[in-house]
Length: 224
Ligand code: CA
Image (tube, rainbow, N blue to C red; front, side, top):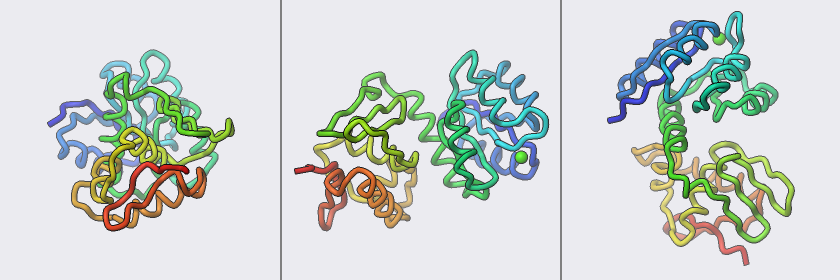
């Protein structure tokens, strides 16, 4: 079990305590801050391994909190947004949030995202290398993909799935395995979720980027 410390900055007490309870049940140490100022103060004092940060906070808002806590030491930030506003998301990612979730979200999804962010933060330097395949260039650290030099916008999950397949390009993965490795889901449910993300990646990067292996699952594509 992990003993990573997570700081939850959220002014809505029911959400804060539900998130904290769920994360504690996963074995994390959790601290709550109910506004931006105490969030910044606790982040400085506790040096958490990850921060779950609400965007809409009274006083100092989530974007400013994100900026300030990233100033001294980079820490993974999972931002919570009240609505699916693309502007909020883009701004949030620009100020250094690593991922975001729109309310209402499922506790299971939250836990999966937290595990994924912590894995990403702790990974070996070797895994941060850029990946080049034909006209596609992937920068894992910058979470950036370009095709023929043009930036392609993938969702965070599409990006993680693409990078996972690209790093294991000799293997074919059943959908259940991908759900476990990329989403953190261990119960095997949600196979259609994998299909819809594969469709999204193919739409943006071309059909050949991911190969369907009938009766088994998916592999990084032979783009010939
Ligand atoms: Ca709020």
